[in-house]
Length: 331
Image (cartoon, rainbow, N blue to C red):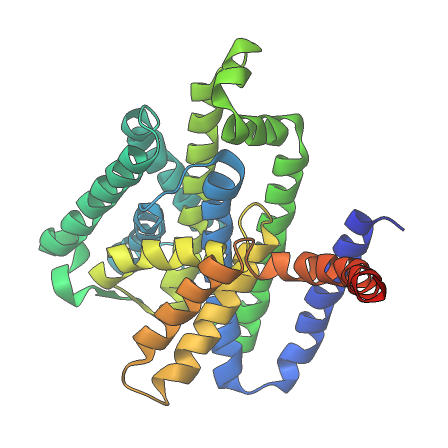
């Protein structure tokens, strides 16, 4: 069995195990896992840009916010999406995320490096400004409180466990879709652009279009995360679209391991649970979390997903080191 197939089996086993043990955990843990899965979808959308295309975005919170605000506005002003129409809201959330990214991408994709980073930051802050200032639609600083979660196919999503399984299903579908995408010829082209864009241009690839499509798709998955977040949190406010949300998503990918997809999900889980645990222990938990990020970047450049490979290499090198030491002593 090759390494890739073994890795897939491990991921499937973990997902099945999570689905099985969920009913036996506390309601509090269920909520935390649900939040982790939602942010995992957001982090994987960032990984599509950072890990596979080489585009470090600081505007991903904008797409989450657009999906979340759309859900909240439809639910409160039109009572839409509180029954079987929930699926329509999911599609609309995906669409508004993609549409926003399509507009932003016209400006951002023309830049590279730190300039791309700053443009996505500025565009993301524009969405925050709308959320904060457009009081009649978004509720301003107070945000929008959503009604209870809808019933869907006879299942009451107000039950946290039922909602967890819904979010879990979306996460699995998102992971599978992104996995198939990055393993496709298009995904391999993105990796080629990340490694050497000039060479890909010489080979005849339209690198701008490839990056633009990846940017739009990342926005679509961010919009889905926003729809799920709105119903999970029960409140949508400008706090959801601040810079810190985009930075968190980016750091989740760095912590878990860019260019792996699963690394983003692992990073999201670690950050959500570590943040919740540390905040109950010390008032300066942000500094501890910041130290974890810094240490990961310095000593684990491949993130947590790169740790097994580093251990394997260390084990392979240790016998050679011992032989050299023995040889030097014999002389």
